[in-house]
Image 1 (cartoon, one colour):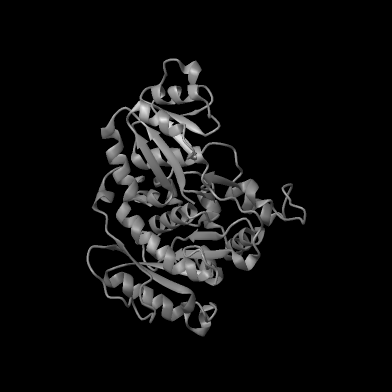
Image 2 (image 1 turned 120 degrees about the horizontal axis):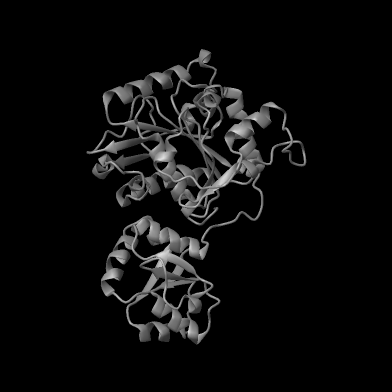
Length: 386
């Protein structure tokens, strides 16, 4: 679904860079912006038959339009400073900072449209895709890949849950945690081990949505990071399987993305055992390829305790690529599902937001999602279920 937005500002030089970024970013598929820098042209357009999904503009433009009526359309004032003159004439709308990072600006406009799909019915368990993001070596970029996949799939209208299973949740480097007092994963683990406690659904099971919060910038749900480090270290393979099974059985999500830590940990082992698709994140270097090959060989053996089809569930993505790569990582026989570029700007001190808004990286992630998710959930990209 593409939202139709009207943008009305005094300065034509404000419009050009915004539209250029829009057309070369992930937002190009979600927003269609019609921009005006002349008041009379804007007011005349708003009198026409084409009704946009939302309007954002300078106070003078919005006020002139509101005088004409048709204010049932969601609208926002682009504010250059804290207070607005004649604020009484502009009651009832949102206020968006006019000058901010373009991804944040467009996210605010998306929120104005409330552009997100709400599942109309709970999906059967087999229709929820459990997708594990794993790596045989450290510093491969698992979390960056997992978060970008969650955001892109959420942008397509899918209902997504991002489950971070690292001992130390690194997603906080990329995301701002929302406020509130949602109990989170620590309380959920306690309730599961205690047999449900006081927070039970109709059949004695946890009400899963009571433990999750919404990441609006990521367009998905998640658990609040665990503060008690020991709690994560003690989280067993069975605990992890219970979480994965519970989230899938709840029927609230199309895709659950499990972001793992070290492959030796019980939590990662549970993901390898249970998830229907495993995304192995590699780096184009000998150590990463060698470790991946050795682990796959081990998991293929009878004494590993892993199901025999693990390799068949595995997909491989080469991350941080500066040049062309061989399309046959390790001894997988499967080739690469995706190649993601090295982004030099991520070496800067404050790189969190950049990791979720690089057009070049986003394009690679979109292609990766298409190659992995479309076979598992037909019609997501093609619009056809045939």
